[in-house]
Image (tube, rainbow, N blue to C red; front, side, top):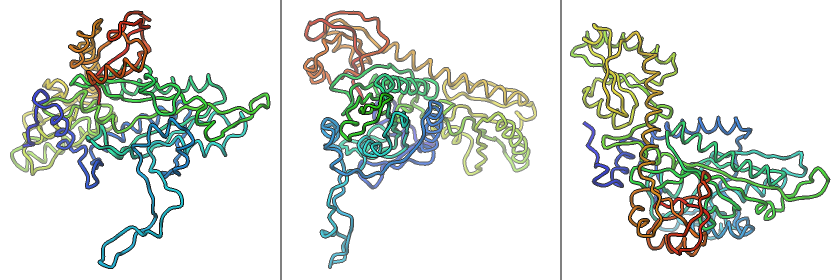
Length: 488
């Protein structure tokens, strides 16, 4: 039987680590701080990619690819950008190795690069240097590009999916003729991320803007979606940045507008990463293992045969093959687990650990009655279903599970979101989830609260009533409540 997990209540961090590794999602690699994404975990990421890619293309974007290496001089052209990433950059200084006299492999000192190369932490600089040759006229705009890639941001403390030195992501980079177009693009893409989080991840999020101190390096405005995990901590699930003309000015990207005048281009960038895998685990899973929303599950239905001899096995296999064909016609991703080296009880536990939404068990008695036993992963509810109604019933159940996971997560978020009016209340509630509190808008107050409580302003929510009040820390006037939380 698969080894029992540490419970969430006992040690949430260890529970997360065990699910990630024992469910076959990822493991630590020989390279410190980096991970190996295993086939089952990558299959989930591929489902995310496919869904997001279709959403991007439906909004007019195209995929492209830009170099992994960026000349160091590019980073010095946008001051706030380089300051934001300088401490996380991996730097390539040489281009050749050689064998020493003792047989060891060493760096060839004669092969030093004339200019060091930065391993891509994000692509604004290399892309805007490229856009300079692509853009001359307003007829060349807008440029709507997305890139699926890997990036490197050097991390001292890592955790699988949530924070690793190298990770996978997509990054959109668009260029526009007007400020209004760029701002509309920025808001459109955060709406796309919100839609994906809700309808694919079954994850409710709060949408808002970042404070100046939390804003993306080089951005004029950063929009974000913030999700709540089961330990009450926040996880930033996606960001979209209005870059103004900062990168266009840094790389001298101008265009002739309709009046024939030269103007700088307006820019956006936006992205989500394999961090969403961490969100998926922590938002829905339980002490038995992973729970996957059906829309992202590599296997939506697993069928486990139960038999005592070869004759029963053949009879059940024949029936199951017909069931599999019927389910596949409904585009249901089904797996017939006919591995006879493992007992049914072991298989039940394994598929429960892997978060398969529906488990179907069928034995000789079930076959004689024309039924099968179905177990839902999200509720553990068992029911007996007639075989002749299976395709329609399972299709309906998968939709119900998807809906239930979103409702359950939304209910959890609601119960763990608090409005407070005093700093004492704030310190009491901040360990339990999101706290909506008044803030005076100053970075000094923001920094003091973070220093004293380890809580950050996750976002200035977009959906607010504009309620004015008094800052919980300084007592100064406040325009609205903001969302505080401790975060990953």
